Length: 106
Ligand code: FES
Image 1 (cartoon, protein in one colour):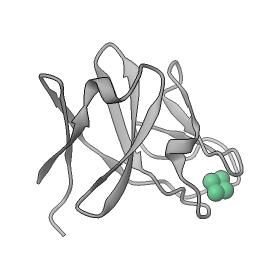
Image 2 (cartoon, protein in one colour):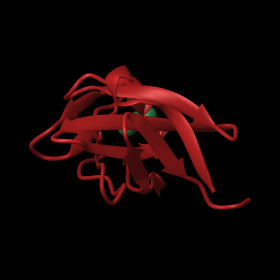
Image 3 (tube, protein in one colour):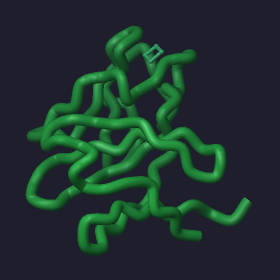
């Protein structure tokens, strides 16, 4: 199911914002050139909001603000410790200036 969560102008290039769709907290990063990637906002290691972390546009990663694990924004896999489990990823579509997130029916 597709949810419109915001506008492309809501997320400056190189930054990340938190959105909620169907009670799922989602961190959406703007990598530039119209590329937006979405992962679950909650770190897989402990209770931390990835949308408060730093995006690395070149690596397509986000760094957890709490203990510093970096996560691949495409696969959700951690690239550094202490996190060892991936975070869920969500397909993103951009239609005009709308950002749409696909969530599985639950
Ligand atoms: S809470 Fe994210 S790395 Fe520990």
